[in-house]
Amino acid sequence: MTHAADLSRAGWPIVASDLDGTLLGSDHAVADRTVSAIDRVRAHGGRFLMVTGRPVRWIVELAERLGTTDPVIALNGAVVWDPGSGEVMRSAPLDVDLIGGLIERLAGEDPDLLWAVERPMRHARTPDFAPHLNADGAEVGPLDELLSGTITKVLCRAERFHPDRFERIRTQVGDAAKVTHSGNEALIEISAPGVHKAATLAALVDEWSLRPDDVLAFGDQVNDEEMLGWAGWGVAMANGAPHVRRMADEVTGTNDEGGVAHILEREFPELG
Image (cartoon, rainbow, N blue to C red):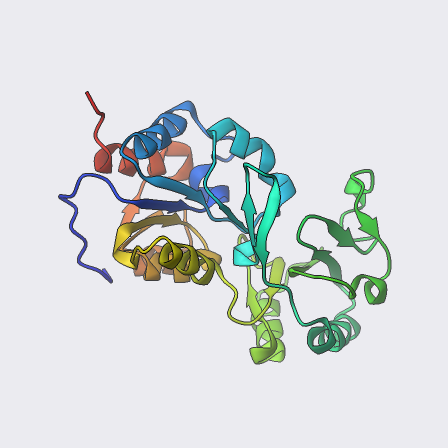
């Protein structure tokens, strides 16, 4: 337990939730019960923010399903997207001059790694990163050509999983970038230094003249740790990583059991 939240209060001004493994079930869909619980948040005057490692293009349909008008934090905090206008409100790109040579060196030392980059609204990748997606309109080319322009996240993965690869890459990158992963360690995500979900969420909350104690947050993986620790009450999913469950203020049910909905129904009573 990291906080002493007042759980007797009716509702929270801000609810922030990760998507995959948290708000969404194993089928990558949001349950009707969860949609209704989110409606309760708004009925109480609260904001519901999606905070995810996903790129914007994988959020648009879900935002429509949830009727989201609040800003969406994407790419682990590197992008803030406005569902109303469809525009990127802000982004935190990597310093390509700083990180480009480092990425090329990592690629040379570990030829099993496959590479892709996220730009604020577009995706680019090497041909072997995900060949089954080659018809999705992404920019496809060699790594040295991808490492130019505005890059908000670098992705690397390998067909063969090595448990020490994540720590090795994080050590080699050092302070030049933020290295994390949102699922298993086979997909590694590299963002600008200091960019993570909590930092971007904190900036928005400050702009709204609110505090961390006004935020109820949900997550399940390594890239949610800072957010759960920063929020007034951090809730981990029962299906989450063991160390995330240990550091959270509370553990709810799994994503397939409606764990987020369960907490929202408790914290936001139905209005008569």
